[in-house]
Image (tube, rainbow, N blue to C red; front, side, top):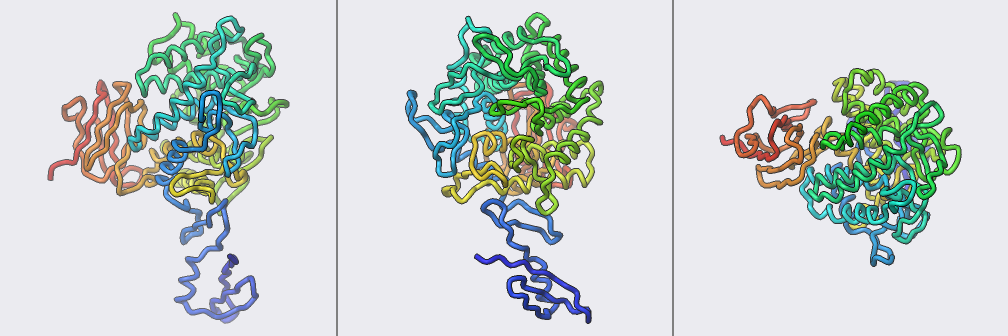
Length: 528
């Protein structure tokens, strides 16, 4: 189909003129025609979709975020399979990268970090819509990684193989990344909270003991945990990664459950946090994340680590870490180094120096941090930065290879093929996180839990009714609902001082709850 760009000019006699650039023909138009043309945008393709603009020329999402979330999970639940010794394995157990036609592309699987992002996606998605079927693919992944933990006699015992270079569904690589071990450990903890099955907590504790035993003094050239090691011999292959926030978050999750390992974990956690503030936060050497980078890892900077560090800083809001200064500085650094591509003014983020392509997971990650920062500042320009980047991130979803409402997602505008991480589990949670601060991203005619500081273990949606339970007795939830509510906690009316309903960040119909000593919540339509 031929694309036309309509250019509106002001002629010498102050007549409004248009020129169709294909033919060069010029004609005088009436004001009515000009109004119609003002709403016509050049049909520029972003991946497989025409760019959608508002009257001010700002980029809009091409479809709803709700559709992307649900369609993406439909694909994960019903994705292509490959034969392995275990039977018909979903492709995310075999390899992370396929062509859109579901043929193998690379012999690479980053299953360690996938455990973390898959469980984070599940926690948010289940709370959002109550779809129990989403547990099955996540359980398959978590159990497969757990099955291949290292033997007790190895230098790094009882830890996951975090990367696999053979597309056979068997995780037998001898090299691994300690930061991804910590991410997998955090994923186990989240899955334990979601299911109540203690074997996942026990596995996380085994990882923590091994990782803590291998910590060392960090400096500018070596992190407290190395980037890559030989699991069997203990040889350090790459000494530096800035991703120590993964270990901090992992240790914090165990400490919150009361597992301090006789004081060892709090002490080592403090060492890790001090190192982050002293070195990467000072020198901005944000390198050492991607498993497929085999050399010059120290010089290959990326956006993932600084953005996830910023996220954790906003979660902690520890004044001693000067987060109010660091977070906007990290956003600006990522925007200037990896967000140089602008799509109708919207920041589209590239992955790393060594793979400098626009990718929707990283754009959505950046947008989610910008949205969290907007939640703190309330500044319209911060909101617009987040809104626009989220809009860009929609265009890789539902590629032309999708079947009905099962979304085959590209990695991004610069990377037209799917990956399990970038196209799905390291993409969807950032969109849902954005809804917490910009609830207009969620559908106005449906009921949804948009965020919880706890883990929602059960949820049931009914007409003008939501019932849910949480793992932790204290926490905060944000919901967008279609009815005026009354709120109960543990079967009794919740103190009105602990919840508010109305407009939030300019969006109506938002319910915010602060729970203390309550796990069982029920929200019903208020009586007239």
